[in-house]
Image (cartoon, rainbow, N blue to C red; front, side, top):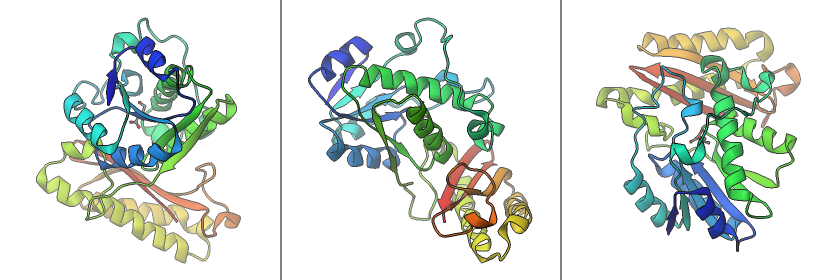
Length: 285
Ligand code: PAF
């Protein structure tokens, strides 16, 4: 596995390939990332991953400085999963001058849920992903990029961006990987104390219960808010600080109408803090 740190080296290396399969990451890799790398392998003629902790997507009070940097371990895992190339730029390489041009996703997609609780987050994500796409696919006719469904809204924002800018990139979704107890794998799980780790699975348990109640409701548009409030209260009573637990339409993450209450059309999404750690999860229903 080759490791490159500059855009010039990356492009030089990709010059002879026609269809890279690309897994962007911020490092501190877990089995969710590695599953994406394994999924990527048959989709392109070279499999590459990036490791870059993107300051633009962190608010000043968030964990940019403490975000775990585990470069050597990450590279060993990537090599094991069959990755051919790692692009690991430093901040100076990615942002040699302040990033004045930014991608602003439309408010109706990016200012709700995660975007509501993390203002500017999707501007930071879209901007770095656009830039990473330019670094990677600028050297080839196009390719494939893979994103995990755990970051459901991020996946939607990226798909939308690729469609609107007509980028020659197929966006492929990877299923959420879970620990044996059901907790969605996330780099931030590493922040949890042993007791918090035991409790953490309650987020997916509560989302599952909310999904069941949503499907059982004979009038979901009318019942939805009460069901969501109850789910949030369930977690709050256990000591969580929920940001949202909600039932949405998969197509645009808006509250569902009666016509959306059908198999394959809904998703429940949640974000909540346990101790100092904010976790997110979702379930397609
Ligand atoms: O999901 C992530 O790890 C990040 O948001 C991404 C897509 C690598 C952009 O920094």
